[in-house]
Image (cartoon, rainbow, N blue to C red; front, top):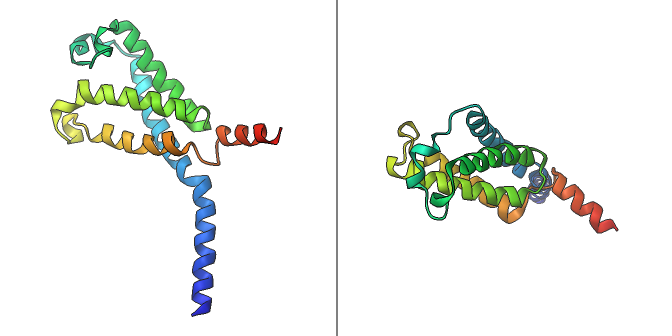
Length: 154
């Protein structure tokens, strides 16, 4: 029985160590891929915000659509890069949370839950993945973690 407890303790210790390095990295990489894809589509596409500006929640509804398009595009592209390397993770997580909430309210909310109907399932999943990054940071495999350790050494 003692051997089983020791094995369990060793295994959970190893998993906790691995989790502190890898688990948040996985979230960052999946989110980075998704926001990169969305940013690339906006970067090379036509500004369709013109058609939905009235659906944006205040104060976003009063921002000129060209500015909204620019901010959304570059928030997604720069946010994706920042998530991959784990730099300014909390800032970009908050920025992407705001962007996702606006997208939910203006594009997805009236379409139900189903992804196939352009529903709000993906925004919900993105928010559920972004919140731990906002609250806990990027994890140990990140520039944020490395920079914080370097600054503490001084």
